[in-house]
Image 1 (cartoon, rainbow, N blue to C red):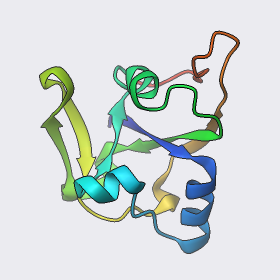
Image 2 (cartoon, rainbow, N blue to C red; image 1 turned 30 degrees about the vertical axis):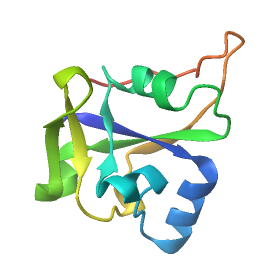
Image 3 (cartoon, rainbow, N blue to C red; image 1 turned 180 degrees about the horizontal axis):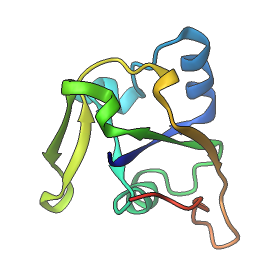
Length: 114
């Protein structure tokens, strides 16, 4: 098992929980898959694509629970990133945590499992 992470606006995640399905953010829908990051990647992803964005949550998943539609594919600098080519059941989340912005302007992360 490897824990992977989804950065998501809290309101979008709330709607997914209410609907029982997460189809992705606008970027996910545009790209045709749901973007995830590993523990080693997620802080850079937040800094690069969500800088200054308030109201985010960090959602953790066991990659093995997402099935064959989860693929690790080359992305930023050739690193392999987890991409899910299917809708996501919010009940599969291991946990959800708010991702506040610290005094330095960077997001404050909880402890992350590798």
